[in-house]
Amino acid sequence: MCCLGGVFESVADQYQSNELLEAKGMSSSTVKSISELETDLNSLTDAYAKDSTARYLARYYAQKNGDKNLKKSIEYYEKAISGDGLSVYARQATALELAALLYVNERYSAFLQSIESYLEFGGKLKSELMIQQALAHYYLHHKKTALELAGTLFKGHLNRKMTLGLQDLNQLLFIFYNLNDFLNSIQLQKSIIELDSYNYEHWLRLSKLYLKKNNPQKAADTLLLVTQKGLVQDQADLLLMCELLVKSGNPFVGARLLQQFFEKFSVDHTLENYDKLFRYWYLAQELTAATAALKQSLTLNQDIGRYLDLAELYYQQQDWRAMNETVKLGCENPLQNKQLSRANLLLGISELKLGNLEAAKQAFINASAIGGKIKQAVAYLNYLKVARLDPQQKREISGPCNGP
Image (cartoon, rainbow, N blue to C red; front, side):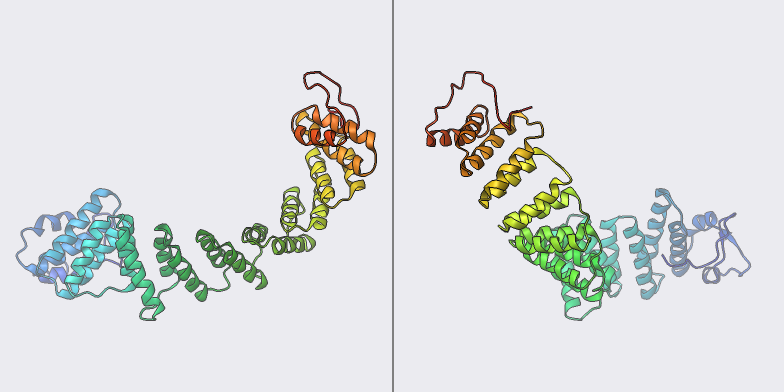
C-alpha cells in the first residue's frame, strides 16, 4: 500500500492534512483526532471534504492490524468511492487502493468487484492486475475463467503485446499447473527458461512437466542437455536423469551415463546406486556389465539373494564354472527355507553342466524337497530319470546348500 497522506502521531492518533483542512475552512494549525474526524464525517456537507476524509480514514485503518480495522478501512474506502466529491482520477486511485487491500487479505470476491469499479471509472488494467484477477478466480474455484485469463496473458506475452517478468510468468504457471493444463505449463516454462536460462531449477521443472505429460524421453533429454551445459550439480538430479532415460526406453544410455558418473565420482559408490547400475545394464541386456555391477554390490552386501542373482547371470552367459562357484560361495551364509530351493536348483544346473551327475541329482532332490522351485527341480529329476522322494516324508537336506 502506498504511503498515506498527512502525518500520523502515534500517541494521540492525530493527523495534519492541508487538503482536508482547507476544504473545511480550517487553518493549517488546527489538529483533529481520528475519532473527531469519524464523528464529523456524516455531518460534512461539502462532497469533496466528505469523500477525502473517508479516503483518509480508510488509509489510516488500512495500516492497522486486526479484522475490526480492516472492516473499517473497507467501509471508508467504499464511502469515498461511492460519493461524488473525488475526481474520476482520484476515484480510480482509491478503487485500486481498495483492490490491493482486499487482495492481500484474500477477499477475492470483493477484490473483483473493486476492479470492476476501477474499470467503470475509466481505469485501464495492467498485466499485474490482470494476473491478480486470474488468481482471484482460481482461488474462488472459477477454473474456466482463471484459465482463460491466464491464457490471454500468456498469449499477449508470446505476441509481445505485453511484457511479463519471471514473477508474472511463475504466477501464470501456478494457475496452469494446478488446473492440470500441462501443455500450457510446458510452453510457459520454456518462456521462463528464455528469461533465465542458467537457472537449473527451471530446467528441472520443465523435465518434471514433461513427465506429467507422460513424455519421459523429453524429460530425460532436457536433463541431459543441462548436464552438457554444466548446470547440474546435485547428485539426486544426476540419478533422476539416468532413471528418466531408463523409463523412456533407453536403458543402455541410462546405464552408460550412470557408469560414467561412477567413474568420475559424481555419484556415491553406495549399495543403492550399484543396484541401480545393475538393473539398468540388465534391462539393456548387457550381461557382462550387469555382472560387474552386481559383483561390486556384493563387496558392500553379501546377502544370499545377491549371490543367487549373480549365479543366474552366469547361467544366462553359460559360464557354468563361475555359476557353480558363486552358488557355493553364497551358501556359506545361512539360508532360509525360501532360499534353499532356488540355491539348490541353480547348484544342480551348474553341476549337471559341469558333468557332475551325482552332485546334480542330490541338488535337484534338495530343491524338490521344499517350496520355491519344486516344479523346475522335478522336471530335471524326470529328465535324469531320478525318482522324487515322498513329499510327505521328512528328510535331511545335504550338500553345500543345506540350510541354516
